[in-house]
Length: 189
Image (tube, rainbow, N blue to C red):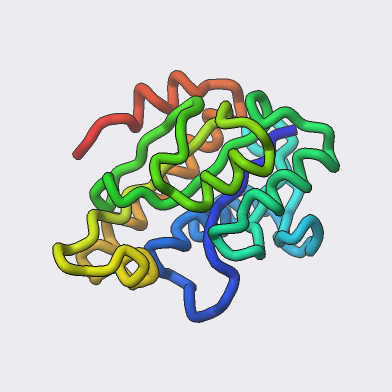
């Protein structure tokens, strides 16, 4: 079984912000694959289903971004899963322009507090990721203000395409085709 976790913040005031792009992708996956997101457990909202012929658990941690690892570690321990083999994390990346995604088999936190938390709580940085571009912060802006802000109308159109591409990449990855996902999506537009 794959755990596909999208990172974000649970409060309504964070809906559709840059930082919640991971939640947006999970919502799109749930809709596309008819997975009901109605289980509340492991400090998360979860839904079980099938993607690419594989059992998946879609997860939206409800711990707030900086504590995402608490929820993810609990899920991985409960199902006795290995992050290196069974975890895909979807999150925002300020180094990518809106509309771009980047797939990685593993890596560092890269300054992302949600990823830092997952690495600290699971003890592993060897998990697959889908980074969704939200754009660099404008000069003089506070990073928190930027990532907790909303996309412009122009950016939103690009972001919708990125969400769709992230869903396709997640399906490839769940089906064991991470190289295909990288080859198709790891290029800057």
